[in-house]
Amino acid sequence: MSVLLFAKKIHRSLSNKRKVLSNLRAVRKIVSLPSYNAEKKLKSERVMLNENVKWLKKYHELNVFYKLYGMDVEGSCIDEYIDYQSFMETRNIANRIGKIDSQVILLRDKFLFFNYMKSNNLPVPDVFGFISNDILYDAQMNAVEWSALSEEKEYFIKDIDGECASFVKKIKDYDAFLQIRDEIKKGRYILQRKIEQSSKMNLLNSGSINTLRIVTINKNGNPYVLTSLLRVGTKKTGNVDNWAAGGIAVGVQKDGFLKEFGYFKPHYGTKTNIHPDSKIVLSQFKVPMFDSALKMACRAHKFFYNIRAIGWDIAISENGPVFIEGNDNWEISLMQACDRPLKKEWMIAVE
Image (tube, rainbow, N blue to C red; front, side):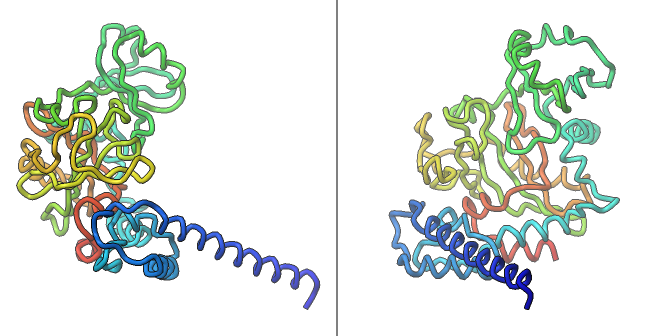
């Protein structure tokens, strides 16, 4: 063996050892995180370590949702939950990502989504403007002067393909718009009018629009609801309800009442049975017009016939449910945490 080949072999060996050690440290960190179910009987540390190593070997990924899913509770079965890599791969195939007939652009491009939904008589917030590379257009794609915004109040500017509220700015008036003017000189954005949330949803949290995430499956032209939850904003999240920004995600029962606990993202806490600001007991709150939202999501999915699974974000106004957006790239992690293990049902959905 040459010196060069020998050196490469030693390097690979050291790299593999470092990777193993790094993964073991990460596994220990996962096991040491606070439990979301401290009130229940938990597995021993040894069992938790073994399960996480088993998951790592089987799926080649760290089980970062181990505590969130409640896998640390005595009697829970880790095999009932789908790993994230398998979910993403099967989701992308089922949604025809990369295929010439894929419809995902109709979801990902917020301007196209608005126009497509509106043309099919599905309720969406009004989009009155479009910005592309520092040029302002009205909804009919006519270029207009920036001064056209001088009379506009209470609206949102959103990155046209942003996810997880990557760029969402609430604009109070023209002065507020001028303050963020430099931030939008590159890229594409929509200007979306504010919707008025129902008074009952405001009781839960009035600082943001609290949205349902309803996942529908369109299999053989017959859409059905797979799972749902409600995302609720807090003082930390400001004018958005995103879990990644400090919001709460809570499952919704079939009758529209929330489940007992709402879940925080790990570094914001674990779970709560009351809203931290409004102090409303979650399980006593019923989502208004929940059944209508479920039916409307299934109806909308019929128009996206080449997308197998869609995660709809739906707000509740005084006049009924309103689609905020649809997501082909929806997260299964929160659905499994707030609702139930979905591995078996998901594999049936995409087969």
